[in-house]
Length: 43
Image (cartoon, rainbow, N blue to C red):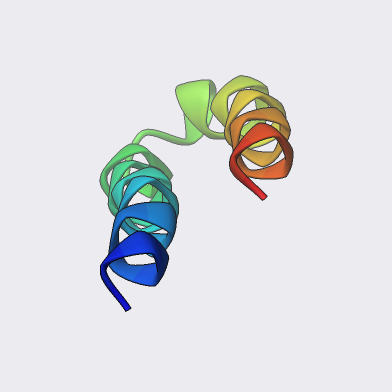
């Protein structure tokens, strides 16, 4: 239970950063690839 929470927390952090950077379209696409790479490492 606790392990799942800590496992999902970094992914939620990436999603929040994606939403913030979504307002800045100049940085959205580069960060999207970095975020997906980070999510793959977390999973």
